[in-house]
Image (cartoon, rainbow, N blue to C red; front, side, top):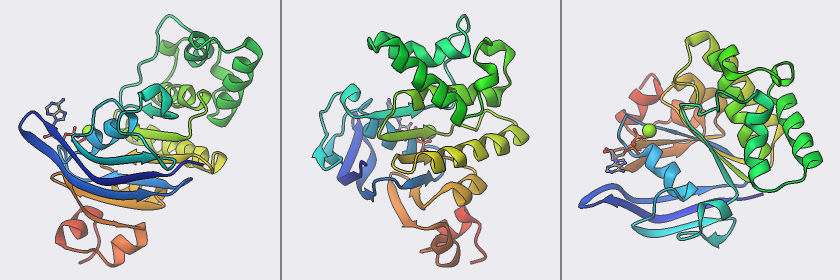
Length: 239
Ligand code: ADP
Ligand code: MG
């Protein structure tokens, strides 16, 4: 069980500060959704947590340990992006197993992890297929399954469904809700600009605007007690 804590976290690219001192506590096992307009800093937040970008100032703690300069591989984090980078020449099974093979894991352990992830994401019938024979939603489930095989403590999702058409988006959202139920100990941070995804998946929603947090709360709190007009408009509450 791993919690995340950000204290006065700032991020600048050259002279341009894009996160202006973020304070945020994410509990172990929590599913937190980041929403906010394009360019407000959501992806940058995930990249800082994953260690793909360095924090300019402030403190990031992962599981109670200061992680500001911890290498990404030591953070116990898996990230799922909008564009699922699958290897076209490998089967679904091999796409999910590849990273584990590279890490030198024993074959029986790899097999167990791949089959468990496939089962969790309804991918068992497709293990021998190549990605080009799959729908977009199935491909994104393989990308999520690949993250699951790494058994991370923390999952970061950056708009994982935004490339999918509406029907697949709903189906894949349900798979993610199932994943959340199946892995209650995993901490999940999920970026979306889709209100329905945010309201249905989140334990708590964080509303970002221009590099700062407008409000943090449960979907119901944000809907019934938006802190300001910005939040009300974003959540779609009848303010
Ligand atoms: P969001 O994911 O909310 O759309 P981002 O986190 O991608 O927003 O971007 C936040 C701001 O940081 C934007 O103004 C973006 O242009 C800027 N930014 C992001 N990455 C870089 C980078 N590598 N170099 C310079 N500016 C960047
Ligand atoms: Mg983004």
